[in-house]
Image (cartoon, rainbow, N blue to C red; front, top):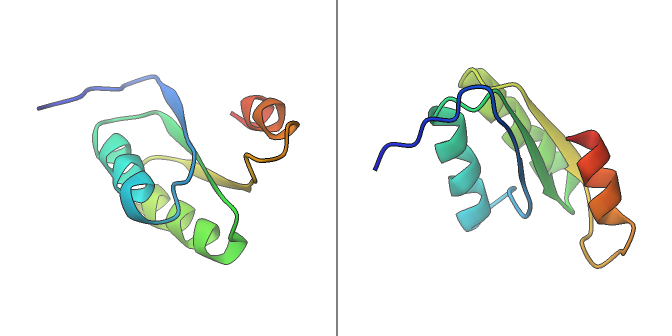
Length: 79
């Protein structure tokens, strides 16, 4: 299946490992204009953001815990 995402900025939570990371990479390879990736581990998140940026999709990492009720607003603003 081919997905084209030109002009779209996408937020992917839990994207520093496993399925979330695979989804973020697929989105980057599908032409997303930008990605915001999140997770709780800053070092890992920064590494994932750098790797996805090297694929040609500007990517920003924001450390976030979705258990915190203020997090969704923070992530929406960052996106």
